[in-house]
Amino acid sequence: MERLLGKKQQYFYENPSAQIILGDSFQVLSKMKPESIDMIFADPPYFLSNDGITCKGGRMVSVNKGEWDRIGEEATHISDKHRFNRKWIKLCKRVMKPDGSIWISGTLHNIYSIGMALEQEGFKIINNITWQKTNPPPNLTCSCFTHSTETILWAQKADKKSRHYFNYELMKEQNDGKQIKDVWVGSLTKPSEKKAGKHPTQKPEYLLERIIQASTQRGDIVLDPFCGSGTTGVVANRFGRVFIGIDTEEDYLNITKARLEMGLNDKYGFE
Image 1: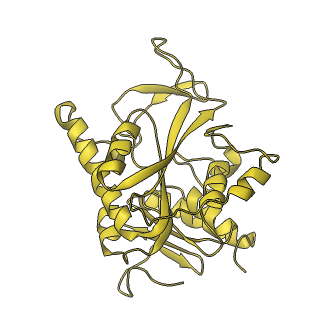
Image 2: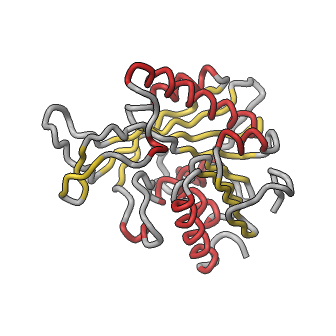
């Protein structure tokens, strides 16, 4: 597997189909080979850690996820958040191939900033996917409707010469011969996908299966700049794609490593 960061880069973990890096995404992305990535999936911080409470497994728990999910004080929160989003999206554009594409997941707390940042940094939004969760946690305040959806934006470079890849025939085949709509319905992450450890915002594998199969081909390079517990990498390897993941939290990368190794033992993707 080609080292897109040079021989001096210390990888947290490597195998023939994956590289995971412990470090700041801004620094790592700035050193990565330009126009080397076919597809990016990003689940950036939602900045929800505000000392509030939520419901999980029928119990009231803190919404705080870690220092990585905090930014600024109230007075500067909005501008700091948008500056953060523009910066990492700009760096992703630098490493993405002209015909590549990027998928970004978020909630109402950050997705509007991300949509604006994409356009400001020279991207064209292809689709606005609504992920409808069949088993969302209840709303404890009883002051608004239950939050049961997340948005996933799919975008390409706005250059007129850019032509994103879309496996239309496969998507139609997987949907009984019908076009798939932009509302995807499914459950939260299953306990069986958390055997190696838990991450507070872990995405279910079925979401990444659709995303990766729809917008990449076998052998393509998939990057996740906030890879957390590694769902993107597990699925990418399962379908024969090469994975590069970055995260600042060593505990989460240990989960990623364990999940990737379990995938190799199952002989997914690569021989």
